[in-house]
Length: 323
Ligand SMILES: Cc1ncc(C[n+]2csc(CCOP(=O)(O)OP(=O)(O)O)c2C)c(N)n1
Ligand SMILES: [Mg+2]
Image (cartoon, rainbow, N blue to C red; front, side):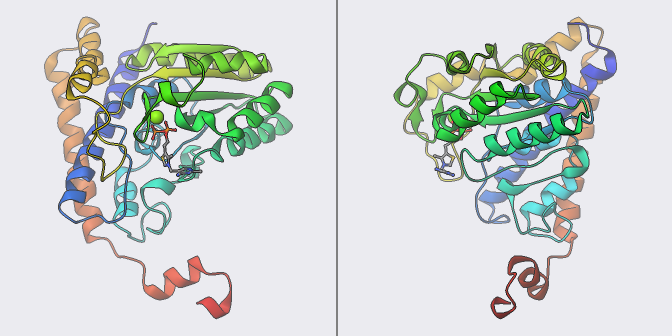
């Protein structure tokens, strides 16, 4: 795959932004600055950046509960993401949704979802709308291995295959659904095999290799755009941190974690960039820019206004008597 210098810079910037943002947010949780919960995609940055860089800018994505990396790769403003996490008015949902509900229509991101499964038929519905409007767009739908056991996954794939909808299903198989290993919840060795039941291509890709993901999604998106229907891509990846905030990771070993970290997607892509014309200094400059922007986002969000109780009530309750 031949990438331009700008493409390489963009991909590195996105992956490093996601890692930096989430590590900072994790710290802020520990310091009691953020409440509620969040699911981090630290380790999984290549599936977000690889998938989204294979799309056209006006294509759509649907995300899931582990969605920060998807938002960032689709172009979301880190300041507004941080505001959402801190419950501020400038957040994508005015601070009422938090980590699991960031929606950014301006970048074609139909958003995250805290409930496992329903985002798959919702994304399939977007694909049906695209087909009816004949806009030539594609939607890329992200979900996890555990979510692929939901009946909704099977119903949606059947419909999308039948109607040849312009959708790419990207299953981020990070080996666990909460504490349950995939081998104890999925009846087949590879989730991509399930595509056979619906007569669509099922592709396995190394989710730690951003270029491999980009290539697989590019091919599937081209197929979808030509009216040939959906593809199911299974990206084998790994989340370095726990499932969410309170996970001590007792169901897996530290050795397993270290093995995956040796194949870190950001480190490998930096190496690739240096083999393709970049100096270490240029990469450091991208990292410095990201760190500055992340700190700026924290400062901005801390200083931003929260919603008043009156505004929150107005937005949350439809019935007058509840306000
Ligand atoms: C319908 C529903 N059932 C259960 C949950 C609780 N839950 C949240 S995340 C999760 C596991 C999801 O696993 P997977 O799809 O593999 O995604 P990952 O968290 O590994 O990225 C579960 C069971 C939920 N949010 N919604
Ligand atoms: Mg999982």
